[in-house]
Amino acid sequence: MALKIVELCVNCWACVDVCPSDAIYHSSPHFLINPSKCTECEGDHADPQCASICPIESAILNAAGEAINPPGSLTGIPPEKMEEAMREIQAR
Ligand code: SF4
Ligand code: SF4
Image 1 (cartoon, rainbow, N blue to C red):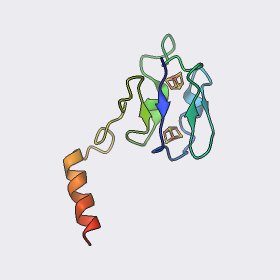
Image 2 (tube, rainbow, N blue to C red):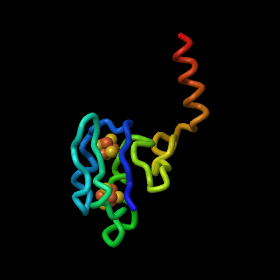
Image 3 (cartoon, rainbow, N blue to C red):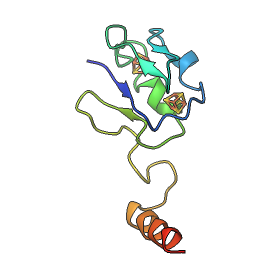
């Protein structure tokens, strides 16, 4: 089982040093997780450290493909409010 970093990653480097398994590496266009090294932090930490420190919602997915920090979880902005704001901005 392994987590996955997707294209929303902004290459901030925050997750690299907190990974106990040295599973995260710099790649282009964004960081990636080596699935053969990722332990999901089991045995080392109660929570996946990369997802705990990642500042970008939906940038890291669990093994089921679900965002560990889903929309609204870090900003506190309800997803429907964000969609509304985006529609407003795009209509300008
Ligand atoms: S879940 Fe843990 S072991 Fe896996 S990449 Fe993230 S920090 Fe590393
Ligand atoms: S902490 Fe998140 S945004 Fe930053 S490099 Fe890691 S996955 Fe990308």
